[in-house]
Image (cartoon, rainbow, N blue to C red; front, top):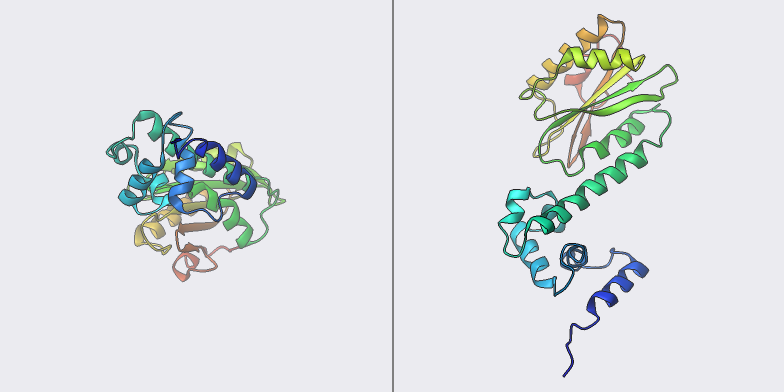
Length: 233
């Protein structure tokens, strides 16, 4: 009797290349992903174990390296492959969003910034510098960690804005495990950055907060709006 799994990988690859992943269950997509880490053998049982352990495909990708290594059958190479897919997805989305040449509306800014926070389980702070034509002249993640727990070096923000010859700055950070609502510390940090940039003649145009449920900014939050007494988007 032949091996029922003979040719399984080839069939799965061909089906997914033809139809994409849209209609496949999470364990099947994860099974195919694991082909890259495990050259031979049946990856289906490990895919099921990972889904059972973390609850969903997205949770598997977002699990920490230490958590992944606790699952039987996951070694350093498999852990790296799983994490690399998440990082590649974020890189792809960031690169696509950065094809936007001008940020003229709140929604365009949100679409541009959202990919910076894909799959991040810790808070981080990002910055965007614009010129007079509302074109992006710089964007990047400033620091990992909470906006109040990890220092935001205002001097570095100002320095980057000057170096980029920015005429406006947008700040953003994420709330990975909560709502996109500003805390009192968020408001204080926003005011501190705004005041520092004002001393060099560059306005802080907005501060976005992202979470899985959406985002807020000065046009959506009265608390942030009050900080921007010198104008908003």
